[in-house]
Length: 292
Ligand code: Q46
Ligand code: ZN
Image 1: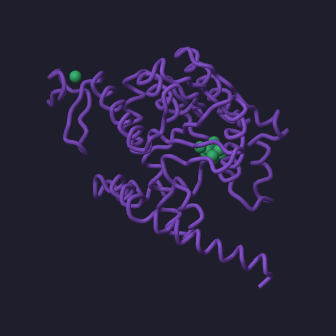
Image 2: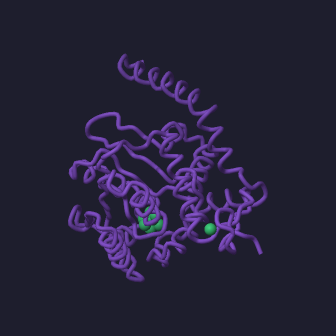
Image 3: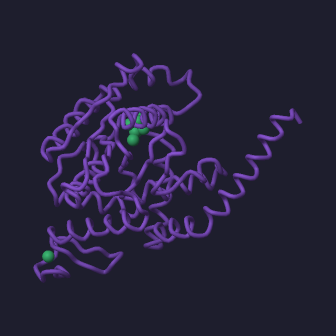
């Protein structure tokens, strides 16, 4: 039996990637410190920022709010922002909303919910019924609604930034997907700190950028967080899930591959790619203006 690296008590978890064991309290501390390091490294936060935290009711965003609240308690003004997507099967949206609201109330943080049905008189249930007539995937449409509404309401709520619960697994699998499909426009817009380019956009930050989904799962369990345990009924067949499986296959063969890929992409590939993208975009714009 392994002991906790910090206190010598029997370890509740052994992390093969680091070769370290921790009791539950010291695992929570270990993960908070990891997030803190990413926040400093990527300059994600300033003291007394007002931050909207996109809360889905699921584990990653719940862990994000819990960690930010634990690290910064008084030093950040945190607001939970939830989008009710109107998904009735398995009571999905109702349960998600209640969990997100409850977490904010437990932590004494402001909570705000935006209802898709009130905004657009549409729900994801209605979108699903029309799926065959649509050219985009359900998750693609849902993602656009969410990005737009999170941006709009975090600005209306006078927030400086919006924090999302994207974890390492999400980032690596999306990078893989965009590289394989040659989506340069998407590739140049990745990273933990997406700074707003104008006043109608808000800066988007990802404090869990270097944290794996397995780590958020363990954190949620050790911190006794109540989280949505039902999968979204419309997630089946989503291509992002297929790329995530592909990534995990690689990661199982070569532990640490994901974080190395992410670091190398940002250190060595992103800069030249952004330069290339700027020059080619400029050419297209010139052609469009002169009609050539
Ligand atoms: S809620 Fe929406 Fe997700 Fe459901 S329809 Fe897809 S994107 S899976 S995170
Ligand atoms: Zn310990």
